[in-house]
Amino acid sequence: MKKLLAALAATTLFLFAGHAGAQNYPERTITMVVPFAAGGPTDTVTRLVADVMSKDLGQQIIVENVGGAGGTLGAGRVAKADPDGYTLLLHHIGMATSATLYRKLAYDTLNGFEYVGLVTEVPMTIVARKDFEPTDLKSLIDYVKANKDKVTYANAGIGAASHLCGMMFMSAIQTPLVTVPYKGTGPAMTDLLGGQVDFMCDQTTNTTKQIKGGTIKGYAVTTAKRLDALPDLPTAEEAGLPGFQVGVWHGIYAPKGTPPEIIERLSKSLQVALKDPNVVARFAELGTVPSPEADATPAALKAKLEGEIARWKPVIDAAGQYAD
Ligand code: MLT
Image (cartoon, rainbow, N blue to C red):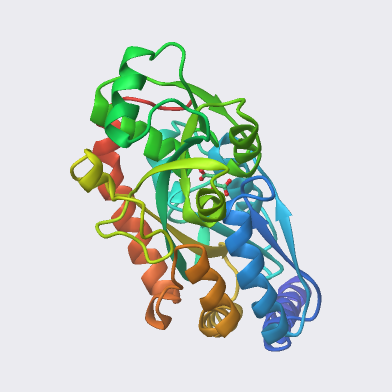
C-alpha cells in the first residue's frame, strides 16, 4: 500500500511540475536548432523569426546550427531532446523528402515531433558562378549535357532542398550531375562566389542579394510567376523547363511529448513574428513571404508534412536516389 501511495504521489508531483512548468513557460533560454550550417537560407529565416519570438516570449532564443546528412542530423538531435519546450527545430521541405530518401532515420518523421506551425515557403533559383559560360537556362542545359563529367553542382547533402532541386533538374534533363555536398548552402555559396563550384539550385533567401549584385549568375526561378524581388529572372517554365516548380516550405517542430500549452504558446509567438513589419519587409527583400496566420498552427504543419511526404515519394522513387 505504501509503495502504491508513493508512486501516486510521485506521479502527481511529476504531472503538477510539468503543468506548472508549462504554465510559467518559458523560464529560461530556448535553443532553436537549424539543421544546416550558419549563413545559409534556413539560418537566415530562423534568425529573423527567432529574434521576434524571443522578444514576444521574453526569453532569449539561441540558434544552434547542427548541419550534416541533409538536415537529418539536426532533426535527430531535436527528436531526442527533452520535451520541455526549450529545444526546437526549424526545418524545411527536407523533413518530408528525407522520410523517403533515408532507409534508416534516427527519428520517426510523422510521430517523433510535436508541430508548432508553418513559417514561410521560399522560391528556389538556379544559379552559377559569375563567369560560368552558359548565358541562359537553355544553354546551361546544353552545356551540362555536353560536359556532364566536368560540371560540378553544389548541394547541402541528401535531403536538402538543393539536393531535391538538383534531383529534379537531373531528371528533367536526363543527365546525372557531379555533386559537391556541403553542410549547408551558406558554405556552398562561398565556393560559388569563389568559383570553386559551378552551379547550384538554392533559395532566394540566399541568392537574391548575390544575383542583384552580379556576383553570381541567375538563370531561373522555380515559381509559377516571376518574383517582385527578381523581376528580370525568368521562371524555369519560361526559360525552358516546363513544370519545373518547387517551393521550400519551412516549419517549427518540438520533441514529441512537449505539453500542448507550450506548443500553443509557441504557435501564438510564431504568429506574432510572421506579422512583424521587419520580418515581412526582410522576407520580401529575400523573395519570400511569411506563412499566413492560419498556417502558423500545429494542424496546418502536420497536414503539410503528411501531404508533402506523399507528394515527393513517387518523384524520389522515380529518381532512385536513396541514402543508407
Ligand atoms: C541551408 O539552409 O543551408 C539550405 O536550406 C540547405 C538546403 O536545404 O539546400
